[in-house]
Length: 241
Ligand SMILES: *[C@@H]1O[C@H](CO)[C@@H](O)[C@H](O)[C@H]1NC(C)=O
Ligand SMILES: *[C@@H]1O[C@H](CO)[C@@H](O)[C@H](O)[C@H]1NC(C)=O
Image (cartoon, rainbow, N blue to C red; front, side):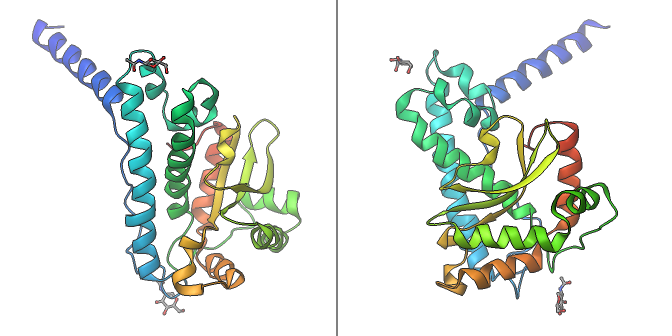
């Protein structure tokens, strides 16, 4: 290799390393317009939710990451990546644990949530890999949705309802988490569909009528993307971040 080319490779490598050390997380773009989920999910809620709430979780987690980076002892933690950090909160200095758990969890949960929806939803396919797993494990998609609805309805306070794949057993299960906790805090548990049940996700339009909001969500679920996430998660036990 010519010296100049070698220098170039070296330069690129050094830049890449510096970037992964200094990297801030970014607010992802929505995969549709703010009014794209109308009439099921309203534009105003989507704007406030994405630009207000998601952005606030992002600011919190980036602030913690920059504090971790600025200290030689905690610098390696910031390099872990947010998913891994949330699985290793016991290694994080006490003062950073709560903001990391709430801000980091809020960031990754919303990152997935936007991708769980699409305009008018997409069809659930009984015959693909995911569809077959759903039928084998829940009996039918209707049974899955009924259990999902029950758990979402009963969840007390703020939190999420999830469809999760446990990688080691290939088991799909429905669960809830409080606050901004994510099922992915447990190694090998990959959320593939999530519903935000904080009032900020529905109060503008539905007020106290959570059941109505759950039905609206069912209308916009992107099953195609969910099936793709399932297949990916079967291969490797990690989320997209
Ligand atoms: C760096 O972080 C460690 C671990 O939390 C802490 O003990 C130490 O005081 C910090 N150093 C500075 C300069 O803040
Ligand atoms: C969604 O469905 C409604 C009612 O059937 C229809 O008017 C609208 O065009 C659809 N939107 C998209 C993006 O497919």
